[in-house]
Image (cartoon, rainbow, N blue to C red; front, side, top):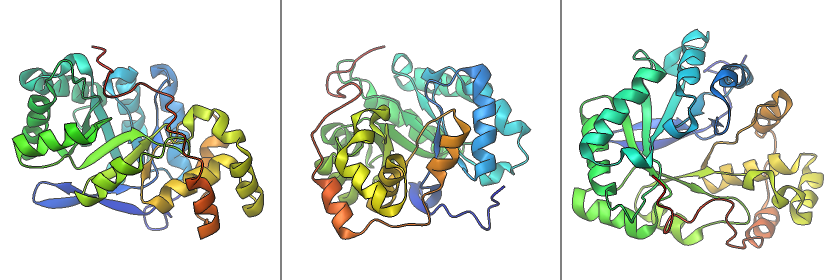
Length: 286
């Protein structure tokens, strides 16, 4: 097992009120992992060295995540935990109540390091009041960092204009076929950390892309390892998901090589603006 002193995963500082909190740049996502299976996957991930777990109310596995963390022999203060508020719970009072529900499922002894608004759902127009509630939770010490997912520039700017600060994190769909350069530039200019979901494009065509395969052969790595290494070198926080022990281990084994400028330029040329998930500007599912 990798301990905290030898763990190779770099950390990224997040704004947390008057200070900062360090988030491991490589995390473990549990989207679509059933509640009764998530514990085994997390135990495998922790044994391999992951110290950052990403869940959400909508994944319906917070209970299993909490039990897995409580039963692990990895000290709790070495694990960074993220969960997310679902769309139907948006609104100030609703958010405060929903957080208590998530915290109950995760375990009251399990601190929530990062709480995220899952989608802006602009048609419902409640995301500003929702984020206001996240700031209250942060200021009361119930969470450490307040962030969002899938926000576009206009959503982020409105939060800043009305509440006086940007979210510390924006977790967005991001992979070689959807590189979101304009949004990432906005993040960089405003001290917002970019976190990538679907970093491997949900295991689609990007993993068989000839350019990616060529770079993988060059380094003696898998296409997935090349893409995850690309995310790290861009400065993204990245949360690959798998329930296969071999792949969980492979996704962690990305710290013994580095992409060169030629590799990075080749991957940059793959951008197609191609999503695997919904468009945040039109996604309003409650």
